[in-house]
Length: 185
Ligand SMILES: Nc1ncnc2c1ncn2[C@@H]1O[C@H](COP(=O)(O)OP(=O)(O)OP(=O)(O)O)[C@@H](O)[C@H]1O
Ligand SMILES: Nc1nc2c(ncn2[C@@H]2O[C@H](COP(=O)(O)O)[C@@H](O)[C@H]2O)c(=O)[nH]1
Image (cartoon, rainbow, N blue to C red):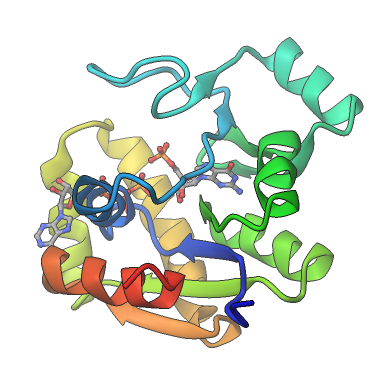
């Protein structure tokens, strides 16, 4: 039996490239399973319910919390995000690896409830490059970008809480490094 941690958390500031890296990795290895979070954020153009997220309203999110259906959840830049517990538990019960792409607050909750989890921090090559990426993505208005950059300062200061840091200079390289950490290659 593999000794690798079976649950891996990928975290890092908004705009660093988490989704881009995970998408690249899953293009090469579609067998890598990523948890689909619930969120009260509105879908961006092109995002589909049940694919990038389960898009829910505040009442639905309240019920997920009240029913204990979330493994962890957090408020990030004015919206709530949470990991559905059952799908993760089903995978782990079958001995299959699980990847969560979540923020620092969620990573901390997972560390508390599942100390055996592997926590990976994705860092930008520089602060200026992070700002360029987040702004260049063009998905948020300036006041939300500012909120996300404020959160980024807190997240970057918490890097040492993670087991491993990967610097996202090259998507291909960091995807390969993450695959290795997941035990896929
Ligand atoms: N290595 C890279 N070099 C240059 N640009 C990159 C790199 N990785 C990602 N990007 C770009 O940075 C922007 C932000 O990437 P992405 O949306 O994947 O970030 P994220 O960390 O998932 O953000 P969020 O936490 O807000 O969801 C995108 O426009 C993406 O194309
Ligand atoms: N604690 C959690 N954080 C999550 C979850 N799903 C996503 N996220 C993080 O939220 C921010 C913003 O995401 P965006 O899609 O609006 O740009 C980012 O850091 C995500 O990693 C979750 O289930 N729990």
